[in-house]
Image (cartoon, rainbow, N blue to C red; front, side):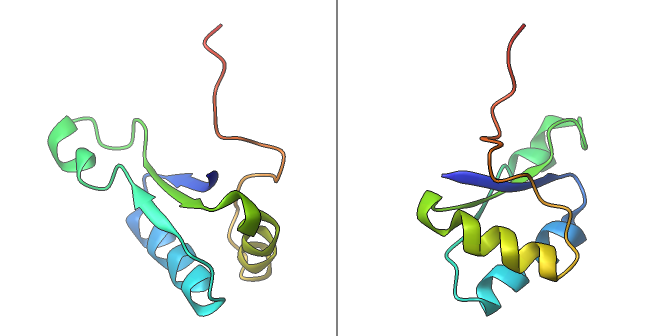
Length: 81
């Protein structure tokens, strides 16, 4: 899975998901429910993921819509040190 977008702005995530849906690209939002229970809104943010095979098409669709998504070579994994 490729993390296309990570944001604590639910409107940005919703718009990006809409763009991917319109392009016929499967996607899912992770960490949506955990925001309500963590008490630390904005710390991690919601993640919008797509299949690795759809990463290029998703990247193109999001960039065309003006969404600031991750770079294609960014796996979404932050180094620990």
